Amino acid sequence: QVQLVESGGGLVQSGGSLRLSCAASGIDFSNSAMSWIRQPPGKGLELVAYIKKDGGITSYLDSVKGRFTISRDNAKNTLYLQMDSLKPGDTAVYYCTIEMGPTPRGQGTQVTVSS
Image 1 (cartoon, rainbow, N blue to C red):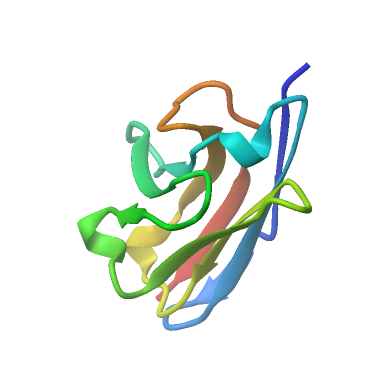
Image 2: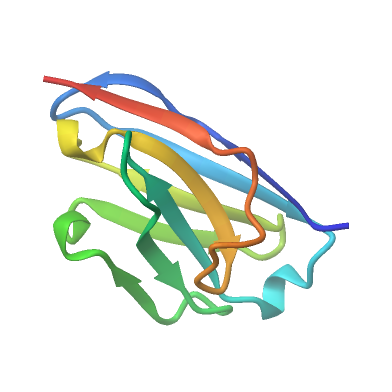
């Protein structure tokens, strides 16, 4: 059974940082590309960051380039998203997913950035 558990969200002021984690089980994690997607309030899902199975290739939503960094630890079956210089527009529920998703995904973690 696929299980993706996101954590690390919270309330932060504009300009602050958060590090999200996603613990994966029930999948061949080390052979799976992974992504972070998000859903801002009242809007649809958007792909935020993508990483190949070996971490050698990453890609980002234009609005987060230079501020967010996706990474992975295949030994721990864990995906990360380091978010720096956060802006109110980054407020959303963040999910991890396999390939580019949007399914399967976990329950999500709320990130709220205050101005």
